[in-house]
Length: 221
Image 1 (cartoon, one colour):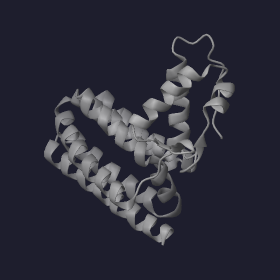
Image 2 (tube, one colour):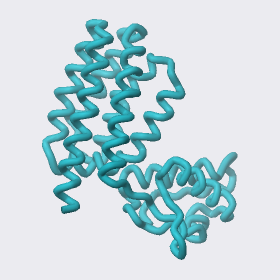
Image 3 (cartoon, helix red, strand yellow):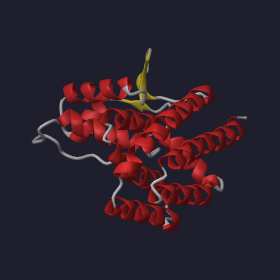
Image 4 (tube, rainbow, N blue to C red):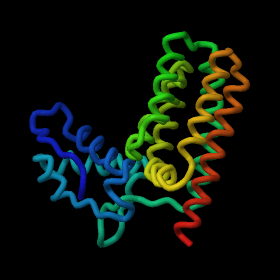
């Protein structure tokens, strides 16, 4: 298994740290689909007992990032084409509404921060950073919606598909297209046009979903 481990013997919540390390390794693709997550090995890497490891694995399973298989135990979960399409449809509905609610509350500092993330996305050449910067761009705007439950579900949805998006962005023209769409969304936000920003966000997500599905169908045959 490939991910960063730390000694968490003195941590307030070892389960939280193990969970976050495993979650990050999964969404960044360091832990591959179908890879076995052995409790004893993880406990040794983090220098903890199996109890916080079991708790972390249980939370990962609740969020759909791992599954428990007979005879194998916990493994990194995969997604079917149909599941990916459904996640993007869900995201398009929720994130468009979040954007509509956010636009009236956006201030100059927030817009400038979003612009900085958009520019960073365009400049970045490391595929491992694209997903993170993309999130930061969108979240910098979404937080103005003041809808933490919505954002929690957006985050969970992104966690499920992030590793697939990173692969798609690496092997297609997804990055320049996403950059142009980010610029259009930001321009609508700067004009205070909540309806347009919402529509552009919806189209941006659905376009990304269609592109990813096309890419994966080609990969899976």
